[in-house]
Length: 472
Image (cartoon, rainbow, N blue to C red; front, side, top):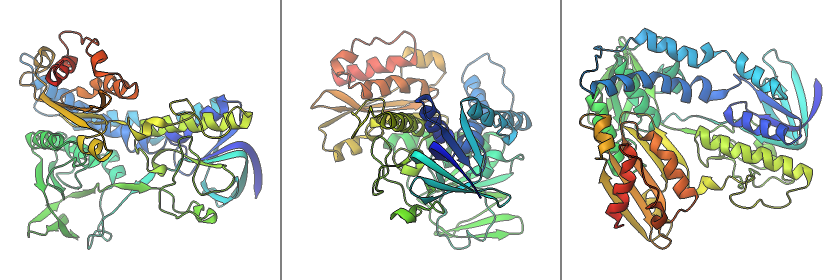
């Protein structure tokens, strides 16, 4: 067994861990990244990048079909789409990511990292060798999340796809059943439908994307149906089994679904099992509660930090990277003695936006772009809320596509006359989101927003229509 010392040890070398380590190094500290799989993590190889690479060609084809005079083929070239997806994952080779980390001055250590004492991590490599690392200042947990499988009889014994298999598959299944109507479920249902699968989406709620404003799920459901996806809403799966020609689902109403593949997309949970957190009074499998600088609650000494999905705060790659930047900078500031106590909200050492200004895009067609709070969330927070909801029907959207269909919703805190939530649904609305995020983070008064004039003719004109509908 060998022992090595660093200022900071980061367990998990996904985008979140990479950012935490890089910011610590930028602050003058030494850092090690411990990774059991691929440097670059879930997002690079099995989530954000490959899923969007699968979705984009279908969106481009659908966009072309909405305009007259643009020649469009009958279907996608599935082999070409899958080959392009492979390029975006670097063919699941992390050499480029390792090169980046080492070039940034970060030590990359392969193996499964486990907390074994205060400021101590034991790493077991694939060959069985063991290495103990000690940290002078901090250990940062960035292990992300893992899929949750519901307790449906027969499911655990049946071969299925998880999100990893669904984003890395090299053949288009003739029939695909998708269990779960969240973001992963709807995105991958549409991606594979457009690649040629006959897709059935089983959703336990009365609409997909149920945690968003109601109209979001309705419009996305319409988009899925337009691509031939069969939606079974309010459906309860009673059992799953392998059959001769694939996988069979039996629903509570007696309906039977047989598919070549079953994708289980029923959520994720923080990856804190087999991490050693129980040594410090924490419960394996549960989220690590952190303050805005990433310090884990309940561990003496303030040396244990966490960022990203593992905290349960804002399980999105971009938000995890944001939190990781704050963590790395806060560790460096505390090591230098320039930060004592808690950092100021909205400073570079605090991930304040996690609480009220988290942006998210669902890359279906139509797209969903959301930031802040839904109307119901704002009311539950005790705000005096006014909601303005309109169709996206402006010159910019009409030029963008014939028959453009979309909606926008604005949630206003009447007490302060500032926006606290924005939702857009429609083709290509993702690019509207950052303006909404800035408005919420900056608490820009509604009356000042009136003077942010949208360019004509763009879909951003919807901002003017929202403010007019509000009464300006």
